[in-house]
Image (cartoon, rainbow, N blue to C red; front, side, top):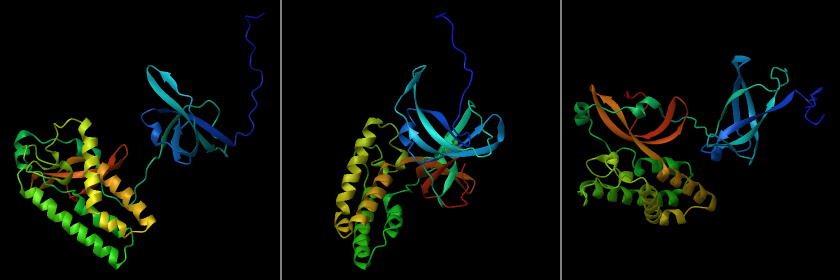
Length: 279
């Protein structure tokens, strides 16, 4: 009869030693997922075992569930020991970024806010300026003598302009440009600025920065210019947040740049050193 459903008598698998899992990745994260990335996952049948695979395909067929858009991501898995069975539920993490040999702080340090009494003693410091990071970028370019001289000249001019901005009182009383740590309020004083203006401000800062280092950039080869441009874009677009160090029993605010993060730690760079006590 037409109303009957045909039962499944046999289900044939080509090779259970090579399986795949299909992940549902949220639309906010799908832009970071690329073919070839490493994925680690667990299954309820083996809660103490960590499996691994590699992203093989990012599919375009989106699914909407309760107004949440997800995309299927196929991960190839080696199942030589036949531990994984078809239909198992998987909880997975995809490694979209990796940093080796960097400074990190616990995520809780970025959420800490001092009390009113402590905030008075926590004088912000303007650490994390461009001038502190540029020598590290230049060292990775393997500059020759003439290129190093051009870089030192441009860096010295940048430090002079930054010192002049720090010394001059801000015209509008808002604390100045937070990217350069200007004003008594430090880089965090512009917290009331509309979020929509931040991207335009960063673009203007990058354009002005490119003008200041244009002479040095012309001395670089094509490969060096590509590395320099990528590093500067990352430097300008990095998010910034205050971290409170404990100095002589009192909190001292330090503005740091935020990099890659996982569930427990966040990469930072700025006026922090390994071993510093943060709150």
